Image (tube, one colour):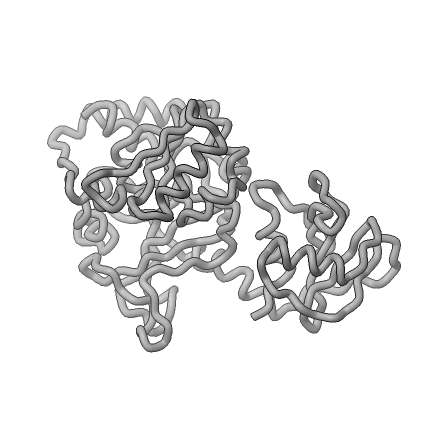
Amino acid sequence: MTPSAYDVAQRLSGSRRVSVSGGWYRLRGICHGGESLPGSLAIRDFRDGGIAVKCWKNCDRQRIMGALERTTGWKLGGSKQAVRGNSSTPLRTPASSHRPRQAHHLRLWAMRNRIPFDPSHPARLWAAQRSLYWAQIPWPDSVQWLDSSFIHPLHQGAGAIVAAFAPPHAWLSAWPRLPQPSAVELISVDGSGAPAFDRPEGKGGRSKRTYGIRTGALCLLGEPRPEVAAGLVLAEGIADALSLAARETDTVAALGGTSGMATGELDGYFQGFHRIKVVADSDIAGVAGARAIRRRLGSQRVKAVTIGNADDPADAAAIEGIPDIEDLEPIREFAADLRDEGLPSWEAARQAIQLVR
């Protein structure tokens, strides 16, 4: 399916807000060199398919579409005419056929539930099998649960761990609440916490699937404000991030792979933290991504490590294990103090269990 104007705008927006007016998405003028947002290029959907473009510097459609395709890596196609900046051509409404696809990740996120303390819950079993997170405290609100009935009629398991990804500005604006995600990642599991397909394998089933636009986004577990956080720890996947969040008081971010490390689109946000640790997977892509961040941001700021006896942080957690806490009372008391200081309950518990135990 050809990407929509929304898809293109989200892919090009990085960590900055895209201005939307009358269905038009304002972008940097990549067709003529670019500038800061809101830019001199706008795009929107035609009613009958394809993308309408408008440039206030009077670039023609061929030039604009070529720039969009080179920058996004997508084949956008279409032969319709550009709308010039001084044109009086009526602006059409976005194609209604795109709306359900664009909003699907938000509908999934709206159906989520917090993960209960019940040790027999599939998400708790999934975490317990690899010693990812403390059993006695709530999970970060950015990682919750989605029942299989909301995912697919032929889902092969009990449901999915669902993680919210959003650009940095969204986390900062919403804190201490959650932002509206730009993407969600689903990790499907069965009733025992083992991996499951989200539909039959013969019908393209996967154990992990992402909906929405994850480019320029991350999943945060902890304080998003660089000036307040103790530091930032970067990991690739959700399981990795959970395992690190249970063992580090710094803010932990899952990047959903190595692309967020390699491209540099999140560097502006990363630079606000006075210390950054990248805990890379021990494969070629993971090591290369960690080195790329360290090279761009400097060795004084970034510490890049791998875990010698494991493939990734989640595997290391399984080897190391995580102890039960026998006396929760001092942890509860400290968490209450942290809540009084403005931390959400899950973050207060995460900090308290590590600082008091």
